[in-house]
Image (cartoon, rainbow, N blue to C red; front, side, top):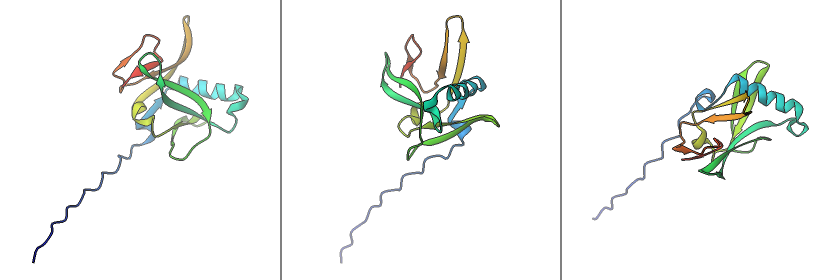
Length: 133
């Protein structure tokens, strides 16, 4: 009698379960500005802020921000505390690029805007709005 050996493919390890605070951090200044924008923008009513990555920019990828509705597969990340809190939506494509990022809002004589500090970026361009991975 001959026997055939069966090989089993090992199951993929489950993705690590990270708490929302380990994924992306919005500073208090960024949370306040998102809240301010949401009150000023009629199109933001009933929506959350979406942070995403898309192809483009000088370095290959660029960050995007918009108010949007939750979609299947989105990560929903609570940010802030109490009345000064928001929920940030991140799609599954963008999450690996954004994990462990800090988002801040700045205002100075040169201008104002959101700044993403991204430890996953291998390089950035001079404008600070795009990165390479």
